[in-house]
Image (cartoon, rainbow, N blue to C red; front, side, top):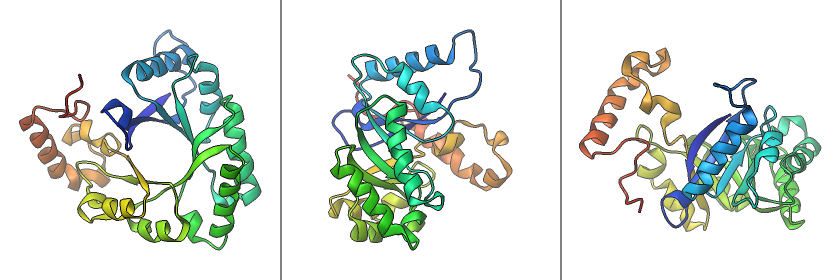
Amino acid sequence: MTFQARTRTGAGPASRLALNVLGAPAHGPGPASREEQVRALLRTAADGGVGLVATRPVSDTERLLGQCWPFPSPFRVTVSTVSAAEGLDRVEARARRSLERMGLPRGEAVMVSSASDLAGAEGRALWDRLERLRDMGLFRRIGVCARVEDGPELLARRFRPDIVELPCNLLDQRAEVSGLIEGLAAHEVSVQLRSIFAGGVLFAPREDLPAHLVRAGSGVSRARRSLAESRVTPCRPPWPTA
């Protein structure tokens, strides 16, 4: 099971983090079973004050989570939609199925997995389906996963989502420097940030960067130097933890 940190609004450092479930390998490292590994990860997250888990409808990760929640569970859960290309009936049914697989009566939010699904001809119909799920009480909020290039402020004006998720990290701060985050806040949209470790690039030695990221090597070096001078690491925030 692979988890990725994601930040969101909230009080306190840990409460501003979420676990983003990316996938579950067929065999985990070491003698522990996958269930034992996931239980340990969830327990560690709960003990640290993390309260949000974000899932995707891939592999058997949702079923595995459903078997491993601590009791009582402190987590709120968001689910992502399948592609609108699979049809609106499939999108709605799969969102419902995500909750069933995790043994949850309701979720915190349902997230449109790609902003391009809303830009298509059936974008409004897709959003109407998700609003119906919210109105039925299956999800508390609706959001969309977007890129800076997707025009998130236009999406916010058109659909009025509760949440917009954007990439932002030490190597790519366009969402911040462009004023996009402030603009979304002006529309009363909660902003979640993903890829805060730049897809692992911040941890990789410069010589190990993949070919398409070689040009980013100098930026990675500068970011690491800045972190070192501030006596922090990508996993150790500058704010107090006590």
